[in-house]
Amino acid sequence: MLKKRNWLLLLLYLSLPLSMNLNELNASTTDTDFDKIFQNHISLISNLHWTPLRIAFKALAWLTQKENAKILDVGSGIGKFCIIGAITTKAQFVGIEQRKNLVKISKKIIEKNSIPNTHFILGNFIDHNFETYTGIYLYNPFWENITNDILIDHKIPISSELFDTYNKTLSAKLSNLKQGTRVVTYLMREDEIPTCYSIIDAAFDSKLLLWERK
Ligand SMILES: C[S@@+](CC[C@H](N)C(=O)[O-])C[C@H]1O[C@@H](n2cnc3c(N)ncnc32)[C@H](O)[C@@H]1O
Image 1: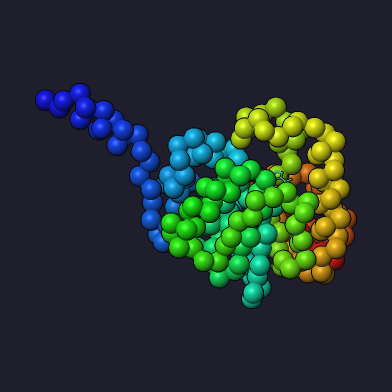
Image 2: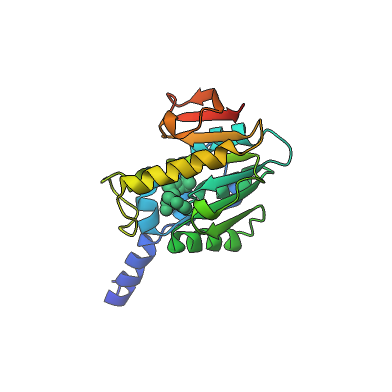
């Protein structure tokens, strides 16, 4: 018979997610397996807030075709998109994220797994210069400003003014980028991207769109 203390240790062990080896990441990895690299409370909200693997692989195929591709994830969360990109492609990735606790998690993962071609910045995208990037990835970052759905936390105000300000700033930043710059949007409204961009490809019932600066 196991003693009470050993039962507790066994229960604790069983509740810990068994992390996958990130070097084994490929197109057949499931989100459930990948998300085990994050703590339980982070993986629980994964399907709502972080890019699913099959979406990430398609977006990466569109964004990393050019040599020397450098991709910005606007609102990088716990870094899932950049980490998948950094492991499976030769491109450079930068994630900018406003939540300190999420940036801490993403930095810890790249440090622990020695992933060199990505880094994460704590800040608001408003203050970040987009001009050195060949591609921008957007998983509906400002939606949390206008929804009552399950949120990451309650630190960000629900405000349609903030949503409008962010969209106007995003539009201005994207308009300033060079001809040929690629943008991939996931679950975003088409009117959030300025008219100087054209949609050149679509996937997953047009939930994922590839745009190019005219
Ligand atoms: C839907 S999640 C996407 C996370 C990540 N890009 C992914 O695909 O897995 C959107 C993220 O954008 C961040 N975000 C929203 N507005 C932001 C802003 N103004 N500046 C920086 N990050 C922002 C949120 O904190 C959240 O982590």
